[in-house]
Structures are given as C-alpha cells and as structure tokens.
Amino acid sequence: MKTKTFLLTAIAAMILFACSNKNEFVIKGHIEGEAPAEVYLQKSKDGKFEILDTAKVENGNFAFKGEIQMPDLYYIALNDQLYIPFFNEAGKITINFHVDSLKNPRVSGSASDQEFRNYLKLIDGHRSALMEVYSKFTEANSAGDTVTMTLLEEKLDNMQKDQMAEIREYIRANSKSFVAPYVAMRQAYDMELSEMEEVMASFDPAVKESPFSKMLADRIEILQNVAIGKTAPEFTMNNPEGEPVSLSQFRGKVLLVDFWAAWCGPCRAENPNVVDAYNKYHDKGFDVLGVSLDREKEAWLKAIADDHLTWTHVSDLQFWQNAAAKQYGISAIPSNVLLDRDGVIIGRNLRGKELQEKLAEIFAEV
Image (cartoon, rainbow, N blue to C red; front, top):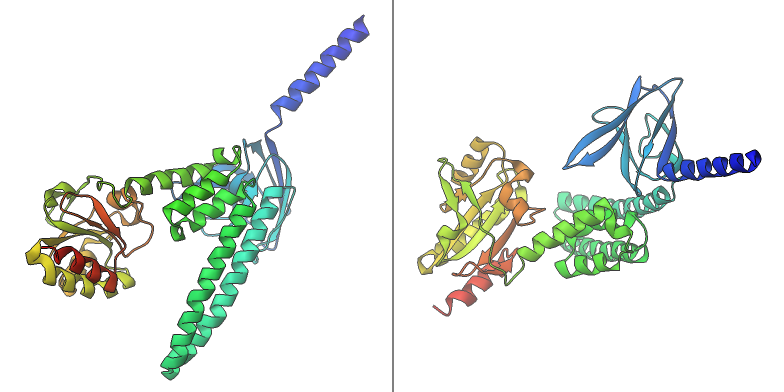
C-alpha cells in the first residue's frame, strides 16, 4: 500500500514538474576571443532594447535560464553596440561565437532559429547580388556612361522585384513558422495592404498569437484606417511658432498631407515638384500641410526657407516617433496622402508626374 502511494506521489510530482517546465529555455553560450565580463539577454520593445537578464562570463562561458511562451526574437548583447539576434524557444539552446564575427554565430537547439538563419542567408544573397550591380552603376556614373546607367537602373529595379517576390514566397511557404511574421514585418513596408491582409490570413492560428503577428495586425489596422476612400484621421500639431494646427482646418480644400524631413534627400529632391504643384493649383483650392519628421528645429526651418515651401508646416520634432506619422502608418519618407474637400483620402504617395496628373484631373472639373 505504501509502495503504491509512493509511486502515485512520484508520478504526480513528475507530471507537475513537466508541466511547470514546458516553457523553460536554457541557453548555454561560449565566446571566443576577448570576452566581456558579462553579457545581456535582451528583447526589442518599442524600438529600444530591454534587458531581461545579465550573465557573468567565465572562461568564455555564460548561461541564461527562463521561460518563454512561444518562439520569439531575442538578443545576446556584449554592450550597447554589439549583439547577436537569435530566435529563442523552449528547450536547450547553445550559442557559440567569436567577438570579431558576431554575424556568424553557431546556434543549435532552436528549430525556429534555423529557419531564421535560412532567411538571413536569403537576404545576404540578395544584398550581395545588388551590391555587385550597384558597383557597376557607380563605375558607369563616374565615367559619365548614361546608357549603361539606364540599363543598370532597369536591372536593379527588376532584381528588387524578383527578390521581393522570393521573400513573399518564403513567407507563404512558412506560414506555420514563428519566423514568418518577423519576416512579414520586415517586408511589410514594401507590401500593399491587401497583400498584408492575405499574409496575415495565411498564418497558423498559433502563429497569429506571436508578438510579430500582433505587430503586423496593428499595422494592417492603421493602414485600413488611412486607406483610399476613408476619411483622414484628425490630428493636431504645432507649427514653427508653437501654435496648434488641426487637419480639419483645411476642410473645403484639396489637401496634400506631405510627410518629409530636412535630412531626407529624396524628400528634398521631391520638394520642387510639390512647390510647382502648389503654385499652379493653390488659387484653385489646393493646399499643402507639411508634416516634418525632423528633430532639430533649426534644420527644419532652414529647409523650409531654402526649398521655398510657403505652405503650412507642423512638427513635434520627434523624428520617427512623430505622432501623425505613426497615426498614418508612415514608415518611409517622402510619403503623402491626398484629401478631397471633404477630408476623404483620394490618393497616397503621389509624387512627380503622378501628383501633377492627379491634380490636373481634379481641377479640370473646376
């Protein structure tokens, strides 16, 4: 009887132990070369690293232990500048690397990390192929060979399209992988809203609960709110004089909400086209609201003056954390949305000839 009770107790203890440790991870690492005194286990949160744990390094060895609900991207950091990204998951993981070669760690014990390495290998291949053509383009540019430059520009454009198609196929082929949402978020800025929605729908139910899936879902929701045909979300931001300006103040005008910055070369190159459009159609009811992603007021004001941008300007000087830019899902600049007189979005990212043609179409009716 005592033996039976002991066995039942032992079995219960084993079950309890197994259940309580199913999400446990154990990381054992070894650093070759001149190792620091300690390393840090980190995650990225809101664009900043968050230290989860610290480990002493002894004879090049370190270890971390903790719990994780599902595979996710973590970092082993040597300091503020040097770190190794890897996909952590429940189980025993080993990470070995040399301090002079952080891009080539040897990771084992994580199936998700192996998928992550396959993606990085794909991206590195793309980067190498593009750099080879870029090098030839630079040579042609130095020689003034415009014919070759034109051909190489076309080749680069086709290569980038093919490479993006390959990445999209990788995402679709790995819809049950927790790495796929990470890849999707990295590439979301090159995807149309409909494509992001399609990718999100393809993920396995468990994968949809991952942090990167939730980030993608948030981006989809933002873009749905600022899609063509939707009323542009209201925002208020200060002009250079510190006075609040609201989007709704421009109702009754065709309005280009132009996201830009003094430090953005492509933005400054596009400014003459916007100036031309403004001068041509302002008297007919066209206006521009410049939303700057600058962080230095002096540089912002100088660019406004230098580029002759005579319309209304606003900024919170928060760089990529600009509140309006985040509200509108702006991930690259120059970027813009065109609103009709009722504040409804009728165009997105219209630049150069496209902007001129759209405005000509609108004001031909006036």
